Image (cartoon, helix red, strand yellow):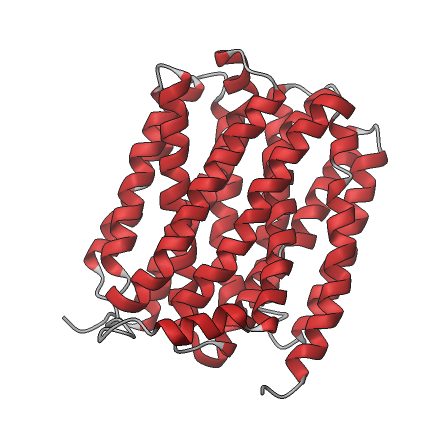
Length: 387
């Protein structure tokens, strides 16, 4: 079989990242009801988010070397199948133990398809990888926004179990599309170059970008996982309204990535990144200081806009710098990112139990300030000639 066209493969990647958006937002959307259903506190709820992110981390570690050595198709198909099983498990888990297994499965499958989709688009996009990775991120936003929106829309008609089970059934669509497509051959089919991979992992610029993604992923998953709990407790918002506010976060991210991938595709990437950081800081300040639901909605939406550019743009830098081992490079970068995605939401849960959600969310602006400093260092490092 010859590989499908770049457009068909881009569609496959978009459906995979849409599925990852579903994975990343499902637990946060139903976390208050899960905590009530199983009688667990915020620290235990944070532990569930930690477990999901640990699964994503393991998937991220696995996908890169496998993709470079074996190709994309089989590992993407297996990951999507695990996500379907995991979503049905979250919907109908009879005990907390089974829920934990399901949460890990959707995380593991999500880690594989997140890295695989981004690496695939980087491989097929050439000089357009930056804008196309941002366009790819739009579909992450569609999946991430769609789950809380649908749950809020139909929560009075169906149980959360039925809704999540239905979402799991919808993931069959990307499974079928990926199964029908043909993918490029593996880059390292004669053996995996361990020495080159070792040099990649010791590259100071690679480590710098990994640290930036560590911070970015941490705040993204924290806000996505705890916003509904934040507005419920701090602003006395009903569950349905809290889910709508959460959907605004993902909508802001989706719309900003759409703009970056289309009308702003010719703007210098660092200018976009600095602008987005300022917007995110403003949104965080607004959310942390307001007692108004309307202003909180503006803050949540602004956070989504502000977070939009960092992850896909930095991945674009990585894809350009490490073309022959893109899968392994993306695997390393996303693994570093997900360490932040594990630490930050869990810390937010522990801090929220002790100081309240408003106090715990102070980690968001602190991380954004650090990202601004690191972004300046990265801009100088990328301009310097490689040794």
